[in-house]
Length: 299
Image (cartoon, rainbow, N blue to C red; front, side, top):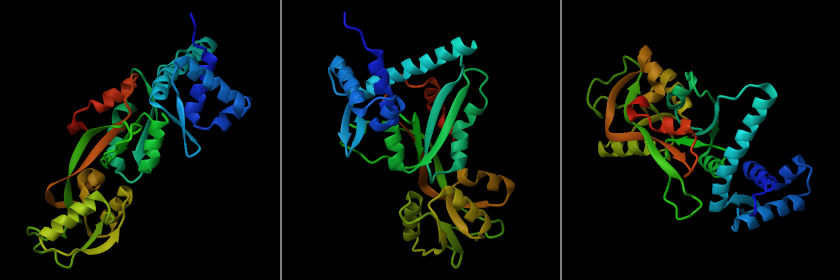
């Protein structure tokens, strides 16, 4: 019976993880052609192509993703075995790589990872990677990330490579916030004339929702500053003296401390928080646990 060649599988796994044939060949002291030949032998053994080239970049095929999932388990367990034999200590932690949209609320991220900070069993080593959306999805496709957190819904795609799974984690109503003492004391828009605002940029989903709300009430806000980054908006809302429109999770500490006050909530308008994953036969247990938490625990 023909057996799987684990050298070929290892070479494939390294290339799939690093995404660069040349870099892996150099680290293994092989020629690029020799490394390619080893991977071709694995593809012949599997009977399917495992990579396809796109703009000089190697991208995993559907079969390649399946083989990679198994290889990841095999060689990760191999590293744990080496640790056990050499040091007599079996690693007890899981590895978790979390991608997050660079502009989203750090308070929400902190709430999402909170269970990872206090685990007595099955310790987790996790890393956080802030990137733009395209970079995050690319990292997910290359299996550099286990899960991606975003506050932007993915657009529909007809590409079979974009087999993303998007799960709603939580939703937060949008609130009009401002420093204590600046409350107009009346329903919007009465009393808001002449007040200044710090808002997300005009292409941000929160901004589009607020612009629609203002249009409905024939109100023209006087804009002091715009920023897409939630961490920057938090500082502007806290220190500028202007009003802002944000999900309350962004400024939960300032609300608790009394540095900001909620004046009103926009009716039927929410910011949604999503987790994006790839279909995987071996989903890390810790990811499944985090995604199974009730919405109220993340709000």
